[in-house]
Length: 157
Image (cartoon, rainbow, N blue to C red):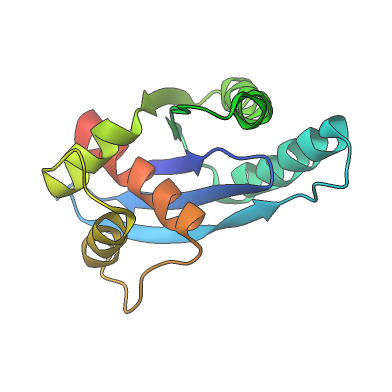
């Protein structure tokens, strides 16, 4: 099973691809971020996200997409632009015939650490341990995307 995890964002969108074998072992296939500039128009930024993510999907051929749901307490402007990026991601997942799963930050924290209020460092360390990596994936958005993929693997199995 090959899962593409996504931490949605407009300026930085994190992605992580994880393979899961029949014994439930995880292996990182690819991970990174797609960056856009705040000086670009929204439509240009969304096109960059679409185009770059499409290349990642075509090269790695995941069959499942796991997307972190949004949680914004105050900044409506940021929520709107990130929601647009998230829409592009979901559309691309659908057009690529992937099974789509969505998880809240609370669900991801709970599944990764057993504690719904875990901090980023705890999540990152669990990603490092579960993927048998020598270092925590950087930046945070990349580690968050890998966590979304791992939680999806835990759920789908």
